[in-house]
Length: 124
Image (tube, rainbow, N blue to C red; front, side, top):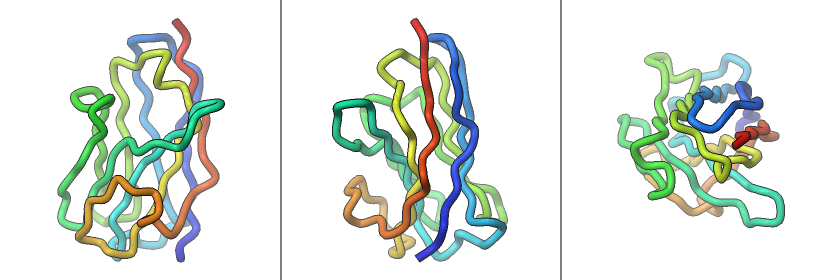
């Protein structure tokens, strides 16, 4: 298990951008594939994007072409660049780690470590 911390959430107007970051207090995230999920009020948690150890990526259809997941070369931080934001993107966004670092999963059950979440609010 690894303790994850997200940052970068906030309030933005529709059409704007935000970049979320996820780290583990300076520890390397190289043993893990990483994912971003989100949960809006009254809705179930849903998959947003994932990146594996070798840089492969996988996106939910709802964010494809607008969001980009990446990780720095030292594999300490994982990012979610969110462009062209819509009010329906409003949610708490969670970073998660999957111990099978080559996997690209959209299944929350495959991720054993989670951050506390960061709120993203998109106004219309």
